Length: 147
Image 1 (tube, one colour):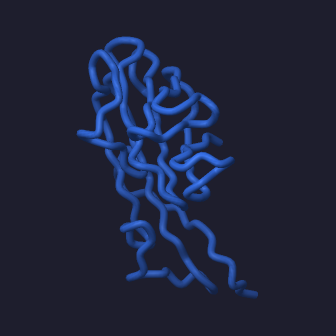
Image 2 (cartoon, helix red, strand yellow; image 1 turned 90 degrees about the vertical axis):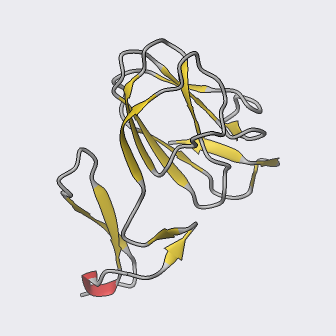
């Protein structure tokens, strides 16, 4: 019997990263609706990314929904999350040779690390999801959390 609860439906898109499609009751794809600027059924994904050499917080190329880094030349090379918005989720995969520092957007925080401080993601570690459940979490605006 169909339920009113949406569920994720996974499929192979002939890419290194799978994407997902949100389906509604009875498995009907939900199309043409948007959340945080993304259509249901699609997520932005970037593969074979290169970390910022030397590290640091940069607003030049914020991460997208799904990110796979293959070039991390030195420990501390980095990437930067977008500005935290309620409902956002960003997945980071580090397949580089060294640990990857992930910075929040300028003025944001990750967990209890303090404003503008990086989270270190070891090479080969399981993909890590960063999420923001509300605009203010524990009294702090722009707060990212990890699962």
